[in-house]
Length: 390
Ligand code: FAD
Image (tube, rainbow, N blue to C red; front, side, top):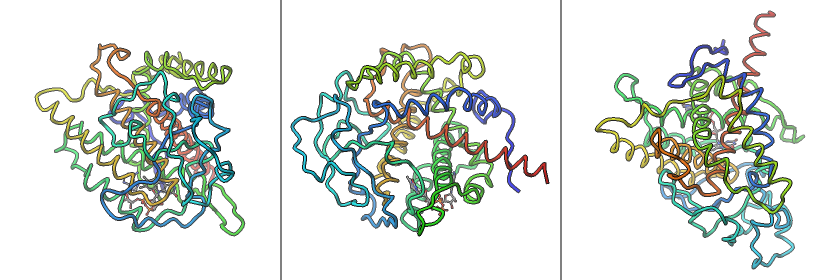
């Protein structure tokens, strides 16, 4: 029924589906899975209680799993800590199930030493906006089914698509404008894949598992959603490899030399993988975009649209969804910043500066997309085998 098998070059990219699946499963996914567990990459700084600039918040969240488990202080890497903060016993336990529980609003500027605090023009959420932000251990808060659905969730997606990146009829629209739509659609697919791969199958028994029919209904049944997922993966991968000269030497210090060395080495493995360089050296060719007279204006417009999308994340009415929505939109904004701020031959090391949070978001987004591509491919392949066997 569904179209599982994709072949040929991923639209607007430079590698074919088979190569992407192979590289993802053999090289990228295993390294990314390790990387996101390291102390540097598992803590994300987020503003979780936010005023929605568009509508009064009517977000409904049915399950306790919606709420985010904040990090006990003793779990932070040493350099993330704020020594002025006094802790109550309550702060030391996981706050899951208590969405009203106080958010850690204090921050230690030393935690971000070695990293500049520059605004990312592509997003609305910035580390520089230090009030009301808290650290979250992403490992304790996996992106999965939360029960967030209905008009509130629907309104966010509708606003993102309708106001910010309408589905342009393909002939009339230039490639650059379609890219924003494809990135959002690819991210949407990835979120749906994560809901399907970690679903609450039986609420009474608290039984979690895969919901393959949901995956079919929301993603696999629509070839363009699968294509957009692969596109987004390659787009972000290209941003990461383009920023390799910067990311290779970035400061991954968390006060744990053994772990930090591991982080550095995993980053190098990813950035300079010989297999990746041999099979898919330029996953996406940004050099073709934003050329000509309309270039600067177009870039500005798309940047504005993306900032609106970023603001919409404050309206997501489920805390855990908001966390991952914000992280992934910041990750996409960082990828856009990398690919469209630096011309082909400029030295990225001297041109761009990153916030720590941007790098954390970028690599965690790449991991999420990699997981989604892997799951879609596995389910597609097993469905194909089943179909052949029938
Ligand atoms: P939705 O996924 O809400 O889709 C709405 C409409 O958008 C569809 O009817 C279709 O027309 C279109 N559409 C769907 N997919 C695509 C695509 N890939 N490309 C283009 N168009 C598409 N729920 C959770 O359980 N866990 C989460 O972590 C989570 N995170 C979220 C993060 C954000 C930022 C948002 C806005 C929502 C999140 N949700 C999460 C809710 C979830 O995405 C769905 O909205 C919800 O499950 C209801 O799904 P639905 O079937 O109504 O379709």
